[in-house]
Image (cartoon, rainbow, N blue to C red):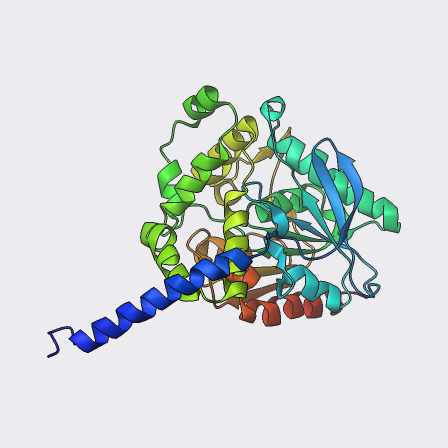
Length: 356
């Protein structure tokens, strides 16, 4: 007899047997699983400043683009989410379309990096990478793709040095940090960041990860691990799961002084909207961004709500502004099947139209 939830004894028994079979198969699958790592595309180091390294991605065929595309990722995770694995790689999609792609690896800050500032990250490291590519290619300006916090850095750099950026692309980039649905902003708005940094020095990666996991506690702490049972008999699916987990928990600590400045000026001060962001002695004004801008955001993003990114349209000085609203979340925009089809093609087409 079925109960009020339509769970009959036969159905429950059958599901129990299926669960046992999955678990039994999982024991064999886990024996066969290979060591996993992320970063599917070959790359070569072309420039370095301390722990920060600029890599060039090496595709299967020479690039056709004449202007290099530099990727600036966030500090809080390793940058290779854009190149997670062969069938989930925005980088691979760009290379296949002829782009010449480079990425900044910010490295792992240690105690010696505690007093690195936003000026160090934006002017010294990002600016150093931009200048290296400009000199390497003999160009006045290059193309810049900023992702998440790296997009905020890219906006700052492009506003301070507009003559060095030919085309600017932002992807899941927060601009208005005070939208009502921005949980991270609500958490940090009343935070005593001075006490926090003065006490901890660098901000531990494990603490940052714990904060992100509590944004969706059921989905990120329970549901995904229960879902693992359903794929235990699929070796590739298990390896994909483990690769994503490895990326999530391979997070650098945050340089204390840069963290302090970012929380104060961006999350608490909402400086892109209200003004007041200073990098060194120079103030950032998004109205000085007059180069073409492509802004890509995710409709189901729980870290950077769509409205936080859409605000860019009303703040930049360019008339050549384009948006791509991606149907997915903050991670799906890198690794989903839809992303592999839409994102690299959109970026390539947009750059090609502005290549002359």
